[in-house]
Length: 183
Image 1 (cartoon, one colour):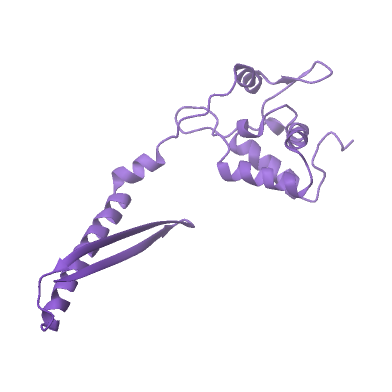
Image 2 (tube, rainbow, N blue to C red):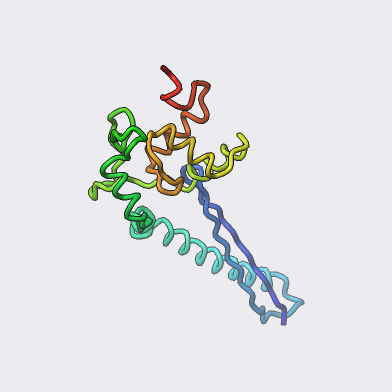
């Protein structure tokens, strides 16, 4: 009796993201060693079985229901009540006047039908943190820079997608990061 281990893998790429799939099968071939063609045929059957299993996994991943579940709205982070009030009503400046939650009169990005702002992506927040480190800023200093840019205090993880874009643009551009420094 001969023991056979068969392995296949596949990488599916879309929009600069990839997902890997692999399958390994182990089996025994009950063909005499003096029948090489029979051994090759049984090994081929194991490969065919592994390929079918791998195809089914990839098809399940690419099916409409799987895509819909990945595209479904992720659960929102629950922000503290004070932060929610500030994002709705604006924030008081030191002089007592109120600023709008969005910069330049633009509206924050909205999430589909719900009307709720779309939270910043993990990549945006991570990039902000990395920019802060490169500029030698601590997290509180970075949050102060964000407050200067947006005109209101907001935590890095409470930014909307649009606000994160505005902050990233300001931190990576050659122009001054704050509007208050331009007089």
